[in-house]
Length: 422
Image 1 (cartoon, one colour):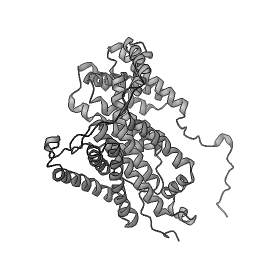
Image 2 (spheres, one colour):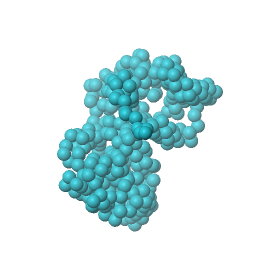
Image 3 (tube, helix red, strand yellow):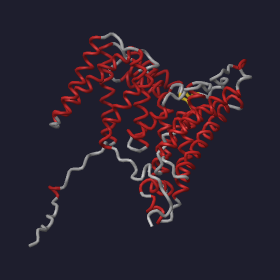
Image 4 (cartoon, helix red, strand yellow):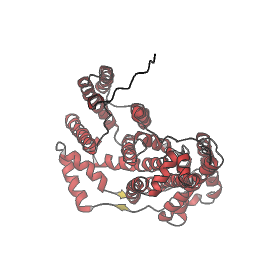
């Protein structure tokens, strides 16, 4: 007697519900809601620093190197190569960018920084793609090797440049890159921001920070993020590169040179990281200094993961981490106001979760909201060490919350050998 039972045909009503993705209108609605919340808190507390043009400009400046480093990780991992050596490649970019900027021009420094990072990417590609070394081991090695080489060369090369501003761990200053400002629009937005009108002044402050003293590298970074989307998702080259990260054996069977595409992706990854490093030594500062990257390569990787290996999500993650990173450079009172802002946001999230009958998540949100509200009411300021740690704490929290919806390339981090599937 057979125990097999015939599978019942699926009806439209029995199909499992798919998890909805955040569409552009939903994202814009969330952004508008967040801006309204910031505006309301600013009016109640009298502190409008979170949406001021200065805060936005600082956040944008902090987001650019994170976004460029994350873009480097995106290219490498879409081809199946994990690149945690971005931090070391950024250091190569800071050193080579400052060197080229001082000796020739800041424009040449940008190119030199990209070349320095690309050489680090080439080293990572040789070790992982050709010799099949574990990607994490290779990345850790690069993060240890390149900063050591740059620090040593700096001490040797610039020992006779002390009179020009160099030191044992610092290069001479380079000339600055030009800044872009839209004069009429910038001054008009400043006037609107000064009135502190609900939502209108906050929107003016945010917009003003994006059109005042804008670095040319910031514009270049935006072009590279948009261009990467079109190259990777709208061209045959991008399709072949992404196939190497999804199923390299199948790609090989269709005539794709997997080694070539992995090499190109990892070298481009290093070049983007090098550009991020040269931004730090030519825009954020005008010299190379030991420890200048401060873990931004790893935060860039976190932004890429937060963005689910997509350029748009990467840009959003870089903006979030750049905003939190810039808080330590601004007024400490703004960080204190941020506590009550997050508490209100968590309370609203709890109401939404109660509406969706997610009682565990609602309870957690209420506890967090209550704790932050108590912290705000019982203190007058946030201690400096906590402010400095804010971007790293936000990185961990965001990754923990986003871990359930992540979908990395299927062959990401796997060692590939030609003909292994035959």
